[in-house]
Image (cartoon, one colour):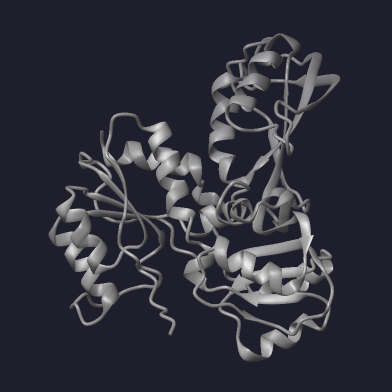
Length: 364
């Protein structure tokens, strides 16, 4: 199996189009055409993880955080990033990062977080904006099923829990081909009229090239007419953070102790108790201070995230319990999810969960 075949499975799990614009996801180091010897899944592709990959004969590391986040002008081994990259190159090890591509997925980081706490009725906290596009195209009735099914196969026509969604209307068309035309219907140089079906479908914008290719290859016209619109609708199934409900409400201290146990946190920093029970809980794995107001607006009793600064605890505004459970801790089960996913999709191949703890934060 080549590395690119494994990458194809990873992009089914976490499409790169889901990632935030600031992020650096995908294949960071290595050649996708190399034969894969084994896959090591980790949180951070540090030097000790590279050593583990070498010892376990894995030439592909799938990490959550990208070891290369911003550009490198030199690779001299002067810091932990450069040393990791040098070791990967020297030992022909490829590094692939998922990060916010999996953060934004409805079954990704924050769903994993919710599941660890047993939250029910979960939904995305901050739906992704400007991510939905609409295709409008036209064809004759005898070609409509072929075109529509090709668009569905390419990923168009999905709305929430519904697939193969389209709107179709009928109208009349006219055209006249010039001397260089080669019309499938009618004759060049003559005005032709007839009946067409207008097909309208929506799709996630990262699928645009795939959807257009499906349209062109399934259409019988020499020249295919189509329009693409950017929609302002939010995608309710893609985005950052999640909110859900506990099976049974808890008092604040009881809740924090419950979170500490479930997320294996060595310490939790939290805002002042408000003296009210916790039932509705918002979560955002990793650095989530930007979502405090969103959690309040969503009616959360508590918001769990990481990397909160001193003054950001004031932003709780006595409206919810704000808790920093640790960056690594809030994402700790992500690598287990990746291993489970790959193991189910790629049979009889070495998919190994890293044994290295790459959490840089320690507690007394």
